[in-house]
Image (cartoon, rainbow, N blue to C red; front, side):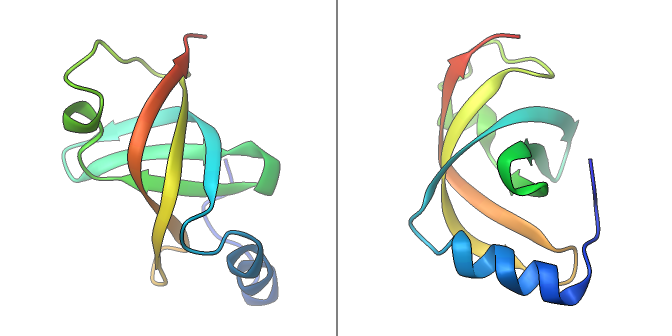
Amino acid sequence: MNLFLPIHEWERVKSLLTVGTIVEGKIEVFYPQGTLIEIDRYKVIGVTVNIKNELDNEDIYIRDLIRATVSSYDEVNMWIVLEDAQLISRD
């Protein structure tokens, strides 16, 4: 999981993952502030704030595969901000 990219790579990823794009990734870490999602295809991290609420409090675990929509960008942390998460499968 690469937490920081060279700035030119970050700009390229943002041009590919525009707001509204649907992505898939695996849950990596749960934090009180949000859940980190590894978007493997692009080698970037997505973050969703309320994943348990979005998934109707389903039991979710590290490495579960989710689908979500790009809503914005966290420029400081170089994260793709996600919303409308859906559980696709369990690891």
